[in-house]
Image 1 (cartoon, rainbow, N blue to C red):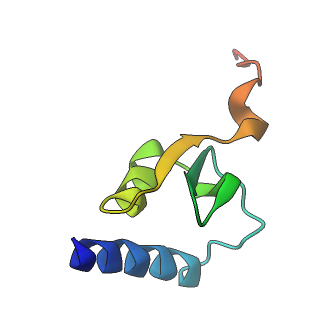
Image 2 (spheres, helix red, strand yellow):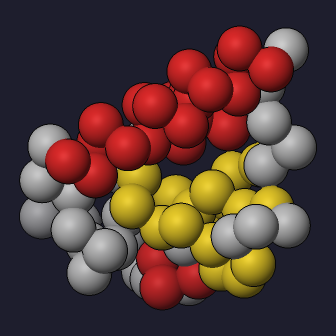
Amino acid sequence: MHRLGLVSLSALVLSCAAGTSPAHAGRYCLQGDQWGYPGNCSFDTYEQCRGTASGTRASCGINPKYAHRKKVSH
């Protein structure tokens, strides 16, 4: 279990090093004791967020900035 947490932390560090800046606001937020609310909102997909949360006590939720936006049809 501890190893899985380290893998998740490593994935987060690598995603930050790969160009995800703190100013980037994705649609999903990693939430938990260490992240607060709304949390680390740097995830564009739910799967990315869940992958990072895997093996930790964190969870994923929709970024409040996107929660109440209307969908625009083209």
